[in-house]
Image (cartoon, one colour):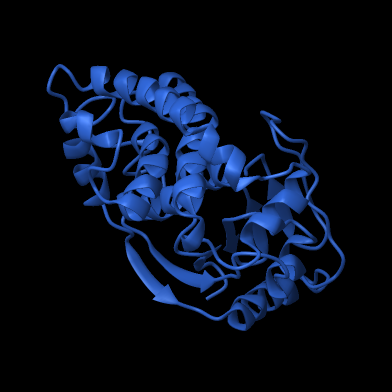
Amino acid sequence: MTDIIILHHYDTSPYSEKVRLGLGLKGLAWASVEIPVIMPKPDLTALTGGYRKTPVLQIGADIYCDSQLIMRELERRHPSPGFYPAGRGAADALAWWAEKTMFSPAVGIAFAKRPDALPDGFLEDRAKFSGRNIDPAAMMAALPYLFDQLRAHLHWLDQMMADGRSFLQGAAAGLADLAAYHPIWFLQRNFGPAAAPLGGFPRLLSWAERVAAIGHGDRRPMTSQEALAVASAATSSTGAQSPTATTRSVASRGSASPSHRTIPAAIRSSANW
């Protein structure tokens, strides 16, 4: 039981969708712990030592923070089928580009056009966390620019599919597809499958359907208290401290090689929104 894959997430999280599809691509069984969208998240931070972002992967008492690191750990533990059907370098670069450049305009469009779909307190929570003023009126005024930015990124992806390939790097889906898909998934979830500017890219819409068809693997519900019990059982078996002891994730934003330590669980982190 202590080696079960546990994902702490919520259904509307774009980065969690990338990880859920990764679990599906690998055909894995996993336990789903639904966490609050905004703070406080007492059971999650008991595991992470204060890390509050989404998603978090737990395997026993090992805690992996940030979706980039989570995908690397899933690949290490379950290398087949792999996230890199055409090799690592270009796939990692494409994934980084998609997450750092496509995500921002896609989310800006969604926040500006659908503030009613956000939970109470969501923008205030994210503004406090980021240190920025998130002004819906300013985002609405920026919509033409956000659409132009996103349209350019979608055009580049569309050109990759011009030779008739099924996925971004060939016949098999990989990390690049999952990373590029999750901002598109976020738009489609909020505005429909052919929402602007997606409707102008029929090849991408077909590709998005193929990525979505990967599914999420074998997902089963688990409570946060059950996840804490798994961590406690894992630490007890090794004689380590309780996982609810004070711990802290030790990684700097944007670090290529995230630092980690085991106090008492392996708290590993990279950078994520």
